[in-house]
Length: 207
Image 1 (cartoon, rainbow, N blue to C red):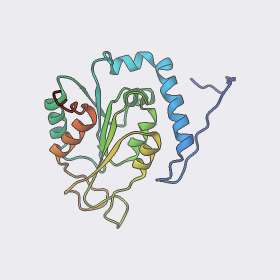
Image 2 (image 1 turned 180 degrees about the vertical axis):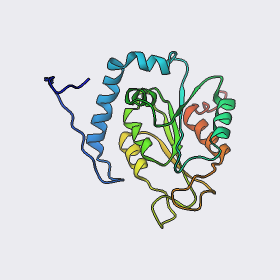
Image 3 (image 1 turned 120 degrees about the horizontal axis):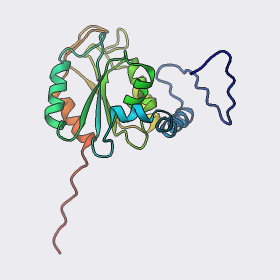
Image 4 (image 1 turned 60 degrees about the horizontal axis):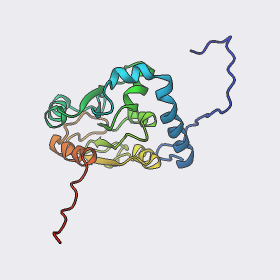
């Protein structure tokens, strides 16, 4: 950990800088993501193992839980994900109160990230570029860009810059800006299945 009396010598140093919301700069963010993907397993092996002890055979679905702009039927969503994917996938819940190393590890082992629009989705930068299959971002019907009833696409821009498949799901609930809302659980399950499970091979015509 950093101390005031410590001097660090490095051969390469990445210094990320903030950009305007929805204005992800593709080359820098991809370089940072690639560096993260390669470095995290080397510096956090024990924490990664805690969240994903059997990473080779147990894919991870990471679900974000928020207080503001939260999912009212969050428990129903978790139960449905467990029922559909629980025999083959582990379901983790990210609350945003975890220690930084845990936040990094949880997003690094995730195969799929599901959550309402919010700053927590920026943690996709810690995802494993060789593992992450997609992000499902949930929006209330009232949108989240002020008076405009439209989704804020800033995280979609980041995901696209990183080459991560993403889908924006506008829900029928949540009329006011910033309000908690109910999600269409079956809609989320359908998109999760498309992202996680490989499409069946086309049938071969007999010769």
